[in-house]
Length: 250
Image (cartoon, rainbow, N blue to C red):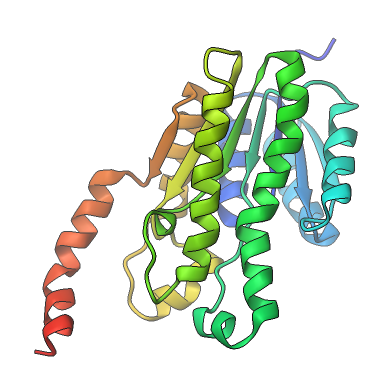
């Protein structure tokens, strides 16, 4: 009988997801399913995790992220191996705002991968978790979804969708054995934000963010701010003078 905690990570090749996986396996052997679009990248992550935790079960699933039928089939296949305790939906990309403004196809793709796709995966897992009356659905949103800004409003709109969806899902499962966790990372030092780092942006270490995510998901907290509200407040205070000067053209 397999008594290992069953964890599924959608978008398992992202930096945040990979660090979360390492932390989960560090805390004990688990049955971990890695889902991604690129088979070679999934294999690389899986190989590293197997070395770190030989006693864990590591499964790999190559899946589409845009097609609803493919998403449903992938989730159904995952559930064939048993019930899921935790699913972390972590995939996404940081699009070029100007590119989205100039190319409607790029705009649609950014909205799909950052908003619609995570919602569809969550809804597919919710179907079975509701029947089992057990499980945690954790979605990575973003503080960018809290308000529209001209520098990233397409990305922010997609993450705003994730926020509203997660709130509704939390209401749906209130008082049941299913928990829904909304994760709202601030700017984090990952390959996805490399262009921000090149511009001098202050980014939180990905390992610190992953630690707060894993702890919050395990606790079933409704909302997780990572690396935390105080870090974000300190960054705003630190950059406030330059923001004011830029606005005033000083």
